[in-house]
Image (cartoon, rainbow, N blue to C red; front, side):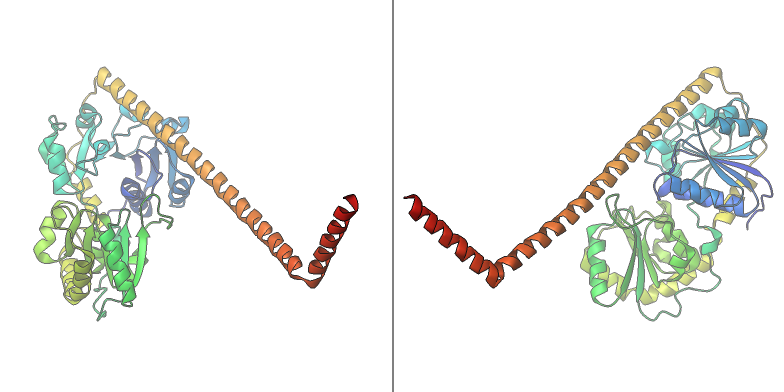
Length: 422
């Protein structure tokens, strides 16, 4: 089920937009979903790269403004959003001081990363129409923190980590694949055993497509598309990519730096979803064991992927997840925020804004120095080529008969000069 949002005003608060991972991807997919279905979308952020700004502004009726841009406050004052979907506690000041009829959804995307916990619990309790988490594990961890003591526990719901509707397919993707021929690995932190296993599969003729990598990995990073998932026989990944594969009916091998259950199957499904398909709670294996599982279990995984798609695809689609959250909201029930809490929330935002700006400045400095180093290395390479060419020319001259004769004449003249001067 997908709702229409014709000219609904949606604000999404996002701490920063620099990397292609985690909350940045979640924010983009939410913005795309709302925009494609008719909403006017405004992203409020402490900082964003040019590439992310361009990507968002390419969506219909979507814009990105920094938290400290005066235009952000002016737009909100002129027309408050109908829905504010808040990540990292980022609420622009005009909306904090006068929320009006805005419905607030607070989205906490982890149960162990400190920046994903409520930074202003009193403000969240006063404004929330819904508070959502990616998995039961994260909900339980957040609830145990005690930061939601003033919130009705029924408001704390599992949103999941759903896949955009475009990833869904009406027919099983892998039914025609008799053997594993093309596999996609998506990871920002691939463990060595996965790297080694992929090398073995490549030696056996399996085409391996890799996305992600560590921050120092030179391979480019980009968003995973439906075509990427639909174009392979199987996927190796954790987290959100598992849902991409699940709704497409593509067999997915859940394994990464935490380990994992391997091929996602009915017996392990509930335990795997409990931890957001992160692989936590399962064992780690050697590369040899992984290769045996990947190839030996592929045929069963194809059939299992279709069973899972039929049973769970609707639940794990973004359109259905957003509709569940919005339909589940009760009456608007903003409570007054005390002046002390209001000031504290604004100060926290200012501090976070300063931290992100500092990180951005450092990132730009590193980028500039890296560019300068790259240019210097290129110049040094060219100089080495020139020197090598000159050395080759000198060596060629030395090897010619004329050079040998000339050197012999020089030696003879030197000997004669020494005799005369004696």
